[in-house]
Length: 308
Image (cartoon, rainbow, N blue to C red; front, top):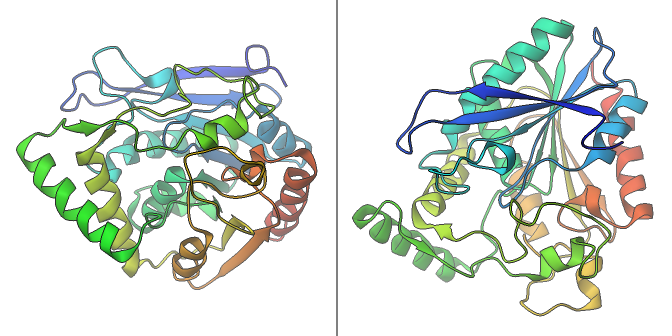
């Protein structure tokens, strides 16, 4: 599939927020047929939708495909806005609800919500409190951001430091929090195979806002009371590798999150959770080397077709 030729892009006008005008972008595959089940994809932090092969696999497996560029990300980032910024994860619920309503009105069939990394945290939060969650029949989490990849002491310092600083200055930020290793493992100009917009997904990431850190922390803590009613598939790599210098191991590990955190929290999200290890996968499992991602697709769709 070609991103320019095989998709439509609909601007969703949202209620203005503390940054002013806000929009989101609903992306639809032109190969959707309508009147069949759908997948709605939510991207991660420092990210946007460019994974055309995910859409292609969904269409091939008899699912319509949609994706969102959330507010302040990718195609939805406006010049006056702070990139990737939020004060509360539930800010994203507005565009998710609009997208779900539009898709359900068109197809009248259940929707599977697929979230990667921070998108997985947002999707999990939505499935607990989102207004249109009754139209979602399954939740698929691709390396969800369910906890920080830190020691307990580091988490303590991060929480109280972020809380103090963000209370004094809501747009206070820090550079260099994200390691460049993950981006280097993906992009074709480094060691990866993927071509994407580096203005929307920089190798070193955007500056990290302390208020955003607090929003993530609060959302993660709320999941301690998660009670998601639909079947959940939690996908994760077979190993994690943390570091700031690229090595060959970065091509077969999750270099962003700790898979033990994903498993520990993931299994508590609802009563019907399937943990799925994908051997040698990257953080975004569907951007892993071909044999790895093909295995992930096959297993995911085998699970998904069983959902009513």
